[in-house]
Length: 299
Ligand SMILES: NC(=O)c1ccc[n+]([C@@H]2O[C@H](COP(=O)([O-])OP(=O)(O)OC[C@H]3O[C@@H](n4cnc5c(N)ncnc54)[C@H](OP(=O)(O)O)[C@@H]3O)[C@@H](O)[C@H]2O)c1
Image (cartoon, rainbow, N blue to C red; front, top):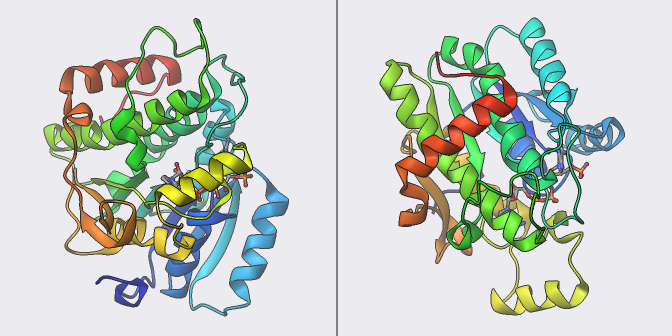
């Protein structure tokens, strides 16, 4: 059973956690701070990030905390965040692509993409791409991208990425958590093809009590809770991300998840389902993302 007590000393490591003001991102950032890392909370709301930092500092960790404003919906915000980070840091050991929206009302990003596709996939793609030179320059660096057990019901609908046809919140969530897992695996393939050293790993937290359900009805949340026989607390849901971020046993291209059917428990290697292993779809998705963001990597 792997827990946060197994995190090696992170002193001297630079880490970015997106969406670190609450839920699984908060617990991921906190555990790395308590292990000695310099952690940047990459959040869209400066006030919420400041409150999170204040709460973390109450525990007087040996690490240090920074805040960077990042709205993953907006590719200009991603560029500004990355430019600032690259100006101010000379290494990046771990990027945790944690932030996501659950099932929001229909909306578009400033660049006219369907909002969930923008926040949950295009934004993390652009962020990883812009930070990639620093990741590649940092020995032993990792990119951890957070997906969901819901990826198995996802499908990439290339004809509806701007909601050209219609919008279904649950469907978009599944699609984009699948996209996150395909991104992780495709990034690993491309890194190896280049002879680079960055490690790309996926994690999924299982079923946890967080704000991801903020747009769901109380009835829908109650039904989910019953289905999973209760939710885990976010500190436990953060363990697969933490394992992927720091464990010497975590391997590139793998997915780590709670050991009880992927819903509950402690980090274990998952069997990735065939839907996420379709190389043709992954390559097409990568091409779409490169064109949408204007960022081609790894190079
Ligand atoms: N909870 C679960 O049971 C569960 C299950 C499977 C997968 N996951 C995955 O776990 C990860 C963390 O989710 P969570 O459960 O901790 O959810 P959460 O409590 O809702 O936290 C989501 C985080 O993402 C941030 N975020 C949302 N939109 C953003 C944007 N446009 N730009 C930057 N940050 C943004 C939120 O910021 P604000 O607070 O400002 O909105 C918040 O910090 C997600 O990738 C999610 O898909 C969770």
